[in-house]
Length: 317
Length: 155
Ligand SMILES: C[S@@+](CC[C@H](N)C(=O)[O-])C[C@H]1O[C@@H](n2cnc3c(N)ncnc32)[C@H](O)[C@@H]1O
Image 1: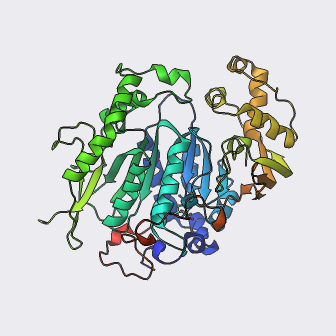
Image 2 (image 1 turned 180 degrees about the horizontal axis):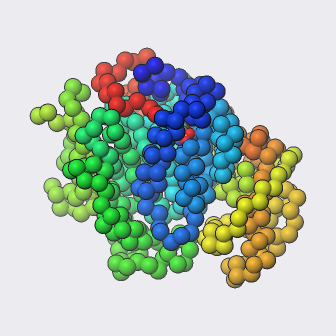
């Protein structure tokens, strides 16, 4: 039973009544789910204006993660492929609305209406082909593409995930970038094998100051500094352009950088990305220990915003 | 499912160009009172497709929403109450959502719409095969993965 759940059966089979029951009975599972979702919510960096947001919980399961969202005053819509898990959520009388659906088929949601999305330990399931018709690349594309469209500009999506290996991480990251997201990976407690947790933090829109990846907890023996997050929130408004947004939020661009600036960034983005990607070829060797490198700025070619986190194994360790 | 969610949902069946709004077939509707939050309602108002909300609430047996609405009405308590009730207190427990273009029914059971698509309804799965449809970098279940990092087991 120590093997990864994704390798045992498709999610709708693996998360059967017995497995779902654990989500009400195992205090360990309940605690882990709530810690992970608290952190995911924190990384969403929602504007702290006291207005509840409309969020998505992808792979919402039994609703433990959703309960965290409710406790913080937000409304949410949860999607899950397992009826058994959703039954548990109904039993718990969660406050969010539940949908039975497969994220790999794309989300059937209107455009630009969702304020943020979280997903706890679910997206790595998309990397498996459970049916002959399944193509992980296409399913990831359908998922990230539809997620990008339903999110409001500047909104974030945070996925806690357990990629099985470096290729999965790359595959997931690349699919997200292709869909238009910018962002990267945040690793909490990278040096601990037990508490190490990975979050993919994505922002809807081209790279800008607002899409910089927050620091992981326990990196350099430090915890996420408050300064970082407050700067983040301030910058978030930079990205907002013409989509349906409450007027109020459009005005608070403290940096004085408006739409023109954003558009300029947008135009140069494709070019930069190509240039950076070709220069920073990542070589991986399966046998060496993993190491996280987050490239904040592309120093090789002096293009400024390049936030893709690269994970690779160094030959020296 | 509440009407706030109905107002966000659209059918993403292959070939459907306008999958919004999904038609509601209501067999059982329940009302669950929740506290009103004017700030949230004001925030949501810009995102709501008003006509879809009015039509949906009528099918669910609530006919008090005005046909037209504009942001200035958000200052009126009476309007806020009605908006709140329609958006957040009416639940479709049993029934179906129907794609406006194809008439495909998505059943709603115990309040949960089943939005799973059949294979032939999928948007991306056909006719896109670069490089032979193989998935070189993903693991198949029969393939034994060598780099065992025990800490990465799923919660
Ligand atoms: C580790 S559980 C998360 C549980 C959830 N956060 C909770 O609070 O109960 C992962 C969930 O992802 C769901 N999942 C896996 N693949 C999915 C897919 N393709 N579409 C939707 N949900 C999926 C599973 O059914 C499972 O409920």
